[in-house]
Amino acid sequence: MTMKRLYHDIADKIVALINDGVFPVGTRLPGERELAERFDVSRVTIREAEIALQAIGHLEIKTGSGVYVCAKQPKAEGSLPNVSAFELTEARSLIESEAAALAAKVVDDSQLKELSMLLDKMADADEETANKADRLFHAKIAEASGNKAMIHSVETLWRMREELPEVRSAYAAVCHDDAESRKAEHKLILDALIAHNPEAARSAMKAHFFRLIEAMLDVTEKQALFEVQQRANASRERFLATAQLN
Image 1 (cartoon, rainbow, N blue to C red):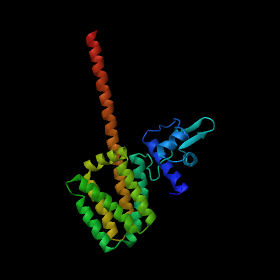
Image 2: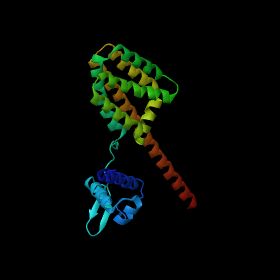
Image 3: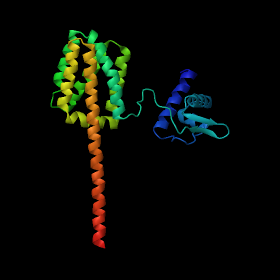
Image 4: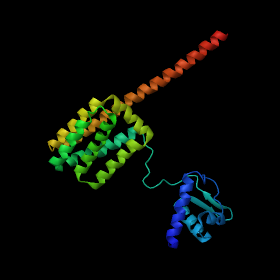
């Protein structure tokens, strides 16, 4: 293993230990000698790894004091931003509507057949199957656009939808309660694609996301009202308990 490859390997191991909490943020790393023994490499390799990690923001080298784990760690490559369900849906409306418009111009019969099959699966009583068909439906439209940047963007948006816990919960509440609307909206999108009508495809996709945002607002409002009611009930019970003691 070359010196360059070796110190990169050690740097990766140090980052992994930081992420695992072995080297907590804000704390001082063990000395070069101890780290060299831990990883079975030279002190020069440790020094090179630390310099490399300082350059990208994982560590701070303080002359005469030591090497410290930065309090704010850089995001890992491919990590997702912390967005709300509303922000994500707004972005999806903008991007996926244009993907649908592009796809309407060039979508072929085999792709339309696949989309039709996926639409049928959305009516499946099994929620997991229906949700998978939903994702594939949107992915297939992006693929039909023929634009690689668009395909990547839609894939990333769907990763946010499924991997960010709060976003996933918001979508689950809406999609579970309004499955029929979801299927009807996707049918309008498919009809526009079959007609090779870019404007209709764009409008149908925008309408789909507009309805999603409205549904999310309704769910959010109901949740807020429920929380207010719960707090009011708790206050009432405390008041009654205090009144009885007096």
